[in-house]
Length: 233
Image (spheres, rainbow, N blue to C red):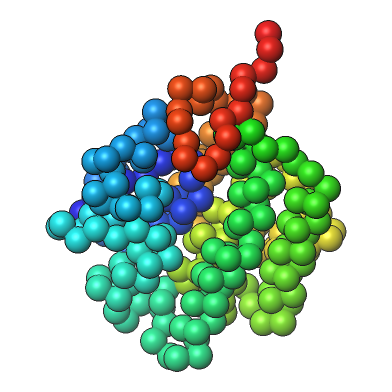
């Protein structure tokens, strides 16, 4: 099994945490984002979306980190509590995966990652959208009253949510008193699962460094995102 992934991207980190939690051996094939290796014709053969990560399970190529998380559990750990079989419990896990994919991470990505890697700015409206997403997450945690994002135990839903929220920590965005449930969940994950958190922490360190010293991507020709020009010296 191979995982084509970057070292700091939240979707890649989430899949790596799942592989670690499930104790599945794999080869991490590093994709150099700065050199646009994900935009090559060779990479497109594995993933026409040209996004990261991609799983190669003996010639079976699968993209979309949520789909990868679900596939790993269903094939290699069908009885694992990481992806419970009870319909309602599984629905809650699926909801949290969708919530992160469609609602939380897009706002975090737009506010944290896009200004680091591309020619975007952090704006008041971007901050407002981010707070709306965090407020929804706070409400979900308050309603369930559980230690984890989708119930009383760790599930695959926690992995992408943790790797999303760690982006905020990387730029010094405090959850503080405004989102105490999110903060408690986040801190609890770190304390209870240090080996899994170590994977996310390494990515967070890289993002924090990029926040201080943005990478030079002027050689990349991206089909969608405008490339940020290096700061004048």
